[in-house]
Each structure stands twice: as structure tokens, then as C-alpha cells.
Image 1 (cartoon, rainbow, N blue to C red):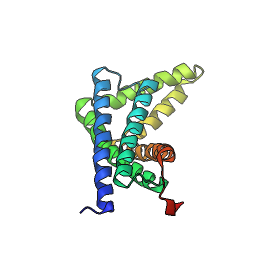
Image 2 (cartoon, rainbow, N blue to C red; image 1 turned 90 degrees about the vertical axis):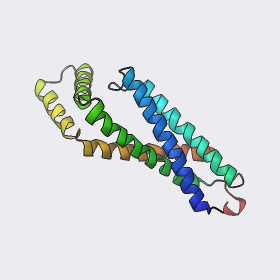
Image 3 (tube, helix red, strand yellow; image 1 turned 135 degrees about the vertical axis):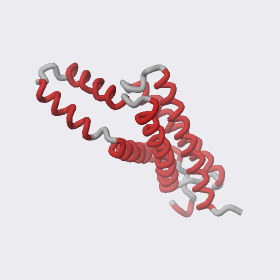
Image 4 (cartoon, rainbow, N blue to C red; image 1 turned 180 degrees about the vertical axis):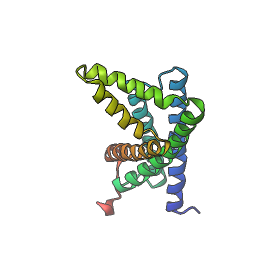
Length: 176
């Protein structure tokens, strides 16, 4: 018989891998469509929908295994675990993308950011633009981008788990 803690680890691992692979599949589609550099609202909305959808599936699975009960703390633990696993998969994909598939990815990103800065701030001087670009280049090393990706995954994982958990929680009567 599985212990609840073991069951939670399996649940987190299963749904974390699911979210990670769905996110990578979406990123590959964006790459093939040459939409992987410019981001935008469409990418954000699809990413949120994937994350929330996987959390709903995971929380339903947890509730089914626990007699229909789930506390908010359970939702947060599961959500952060899923976000961590998915974030690690995203970091691996990002490394493969930037080192092997599209080595010019970071340069393309910098160019798109420069374009957006000029469009949003036409009064920007060349010196200010160069300074901003220099700063962005410092943050584009694989270690820094990997750290930012993982921290971002955990941050949004917490937010999504909190929001979805609030709506899906059903604490045991003795825990009220």
C-alpha cells in the first residue's frame, strides 16, 4: 500500500512531467512557426491555460484519492512541486534551444527588445539604448537565464496553485 506522501510525490512527478512536456511541445510549435522570439499575449494566454489545466487535473486526482478532500496547503504543495518539475524541464529545453537548436536565440531576443524599446521610447538616446543592451547581455548567460526561468516557474506556479486551490479546496471537516 502506498503512503499518502509517496502518492503525492508520484502525483507531483506525473503532472510536473506532463506540464513540462506540454510546455516544451508548445515551445517547439512556436519555434517551428518562428514565433518563439517575440512572445506576446497569445503565448502568455496559452501558457497560463496549460498550467491551470494541469493543476485542475492534478487537484482533481488528489481529491479523488483523498475522499474528495483537499486543503489549500495541499494545493500549494502540489502546485509548487509541479511547477518545480516543469521548470526543470523548461530549463533543459531552453539550454538545448540556445546552445544547439538556435544558438543565435539570445541575439535575436536582444534585437527584438531593442526594437520594442525604441518603439515605446522614441526619445531614447543611442547611449541609453547601448547601456540597456549591455545590461541585457549580462543577464543572458545560460546560468542566469536558467535561474530566472526556474524562479519564474515557481513564482507563477505558486500564484496559479493559490488561485486554483482557493476554488477547488474542500478541507476535511475536522480541519475547518
